[in-house]
Image 1 (cartoon, one colour):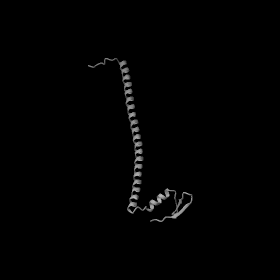
Image 2 (cartoon, one colour):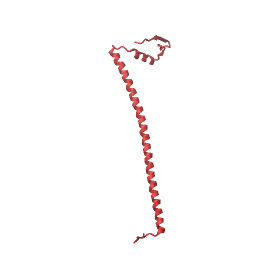
Image 3 (cartoon, one colour):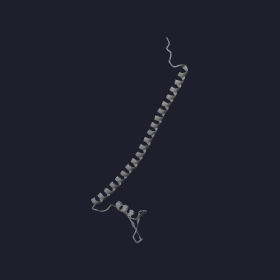
Image 4 (cartoon, helix red, strand yellow):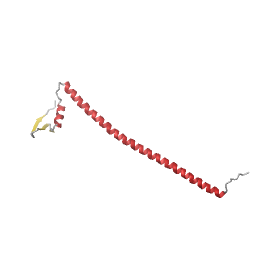
Length: 124
């Protein structure tokens, strides 16, 4: 004994068309959700990359500052250890920063009145 559907054949096709259009709508929602998920992932990767770059810059600045402070502290410690005398390298760096210029081992110091004092600094 075969069982017959209570829906007549012409309405069956109409119902199948409606079911297919509903399935297409669900599929479009699914694809849209997946695309939004990919966009969010790409955005998060970009944000973390930018945060990493900022962190590297900040970390580099901290390391450079620490290295500079370490070198200055070592120079001052050695000065005190040797009886308060400045080391030649520290004197030379300070001299260059105060308006002097190095040219072929000679130091040209610009005096306050415009004269130029020339001296030859030897390594100690």
